[in-house]
Image 1 (tube, rainbow, N blue to C red):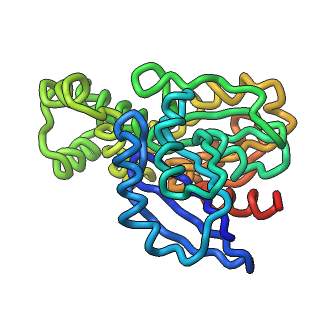
Image 2: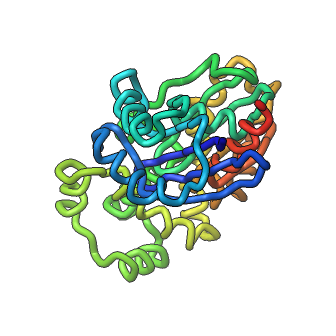
Length: 282
């Protein structure tokens, strides 16, 4: 019987099947988020794109995902998976535990997510024992893609760019108006994803001092508001997962040193670490 490890964001879901002989198969589907999808929608995606590919019976499912914030949201996902894998033991966890287990395995450490959003925790090697609760896009998310994009747009609207950067920005996006941007921010869905979309411009120009400083200061803010508040921050390694951490790793490393921290690993996605974690649990 096989073991399924599932790691889901709002955009995509990574699936890993561990067969009895230790071999690993991988699949991808759309992302799941119980804030936006019901059990039937999630089950239909599993039935259409996963069940036909599995050639063995599943004994255990370990699901980690965004939007698992309370029992009600967890149950939405669990009902779908119980219908799909009715003989399996189904366990549902949030994305922060996915990051902690993937990055730290069985060692104490601070686990950080820097992607579209931002989050962090202290993990004692078995469970999360401290967490500065994330405040989301409008009140927090320092160091995230959404935050970087928001800082970029503020500088554009306040005419703080050098002529060189301003010209590149307009060539890339056109002359965006204040009204247009405020509509995206306050009237359209998923403003965090809209602003995170500007992060690639920063990445492409990150060697320019103006863009470099946006990223460097955003990481410093993330450490100040989150990581430096953990009681063991100077005695354990600080690990990262997420697209922003991965692609801006050169700047992130310098911010880690500036804040007197010890860097651990930087992974683009938690899934490989989760497979290793669960294989070690056997």
